Image (cartoon, rainbow, N blue to C red; front, side, top):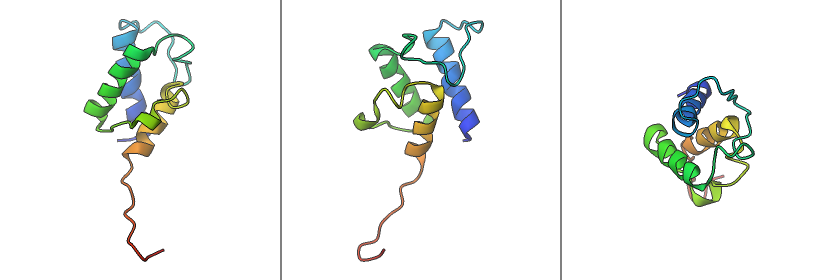
Length: 94
């Protein structure tokens, strides 16, 4: 899934669930979700479940911080990074 598709899915979810589907409310990739009060503790928990269930990415506790949830762009970047396959390391090899 491309970054644009991930961003669109996250943005649509936020609009529908937390902004009552208000398409007229201006929500950009860089809109400050925490500052605007869009993401509070309950909404963040719901968003984490959406990311896990719909995007197939589990966010570890250390990933739940203001920097990763600042805006749609930062959430998208976090999902991309966490969704990358981890490179296996072979013992004894560089």
